[in-house]
Figure 1 (cartoon, one colour):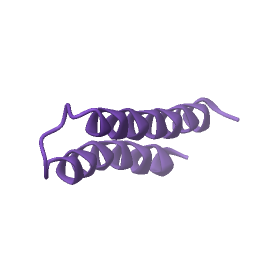
Figure 2: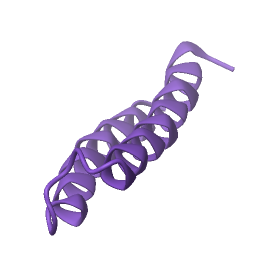
Figure 3: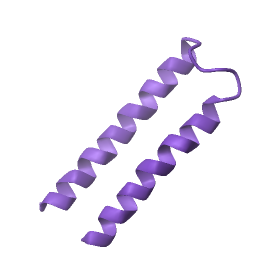
Length: 58
């Protein structure tokens, strides 16, 4: 696996960890009502864009 492929795997793992953390914060009440979906979309958009850029480099 080349460096870009390795970094893609790390970004995908980071995305999964980030989504689990946001879900935990929402369950514990740290995120305002109705903002959970907006926050998830905002955070996943950045990760998805990064992954798409890396795929183009391959």
